[in-house]
Length: 174
Image (cartoon, rainbow, N blue to C red; front, side):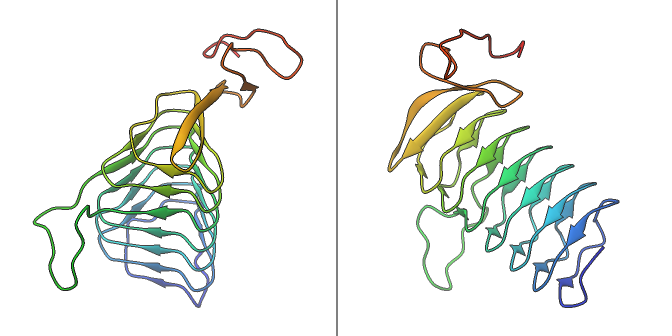
């Protein structure tokens, strides 16, 4: 479903994907199946979005962004793609940023270009990500610091792999 106020130039939109009010999707973008692209989202040409991805309102997805399956991108998350931006001066290619399977990025986080957010990683709201983030880890702050772990099923763990009840978990088995 594409809302009538959205401007979608791409034909590479998967089945059962919803693109809501006032979105712009440029011609070269690819969006997978079962995605939910909320209102006021801008998606540039060299962007690939996997299946079952949620992009909340107010997000701009710039050239070079790769989003894997089952990713959550919170409201007003900011991505960059050029380390030395200048008006009317463009690099020959933009840095690639990768968001791996199952990762979640909280509202108003900023992801600096060229970094990778690992599978099932969890980025707290308002965080500044300046480096690669390993799989199944929790990061927040400005700049973000490693604060714990998260299982593939979303159980939050401290740095000793314990949940809020003090029970120890394995990341991949939960």
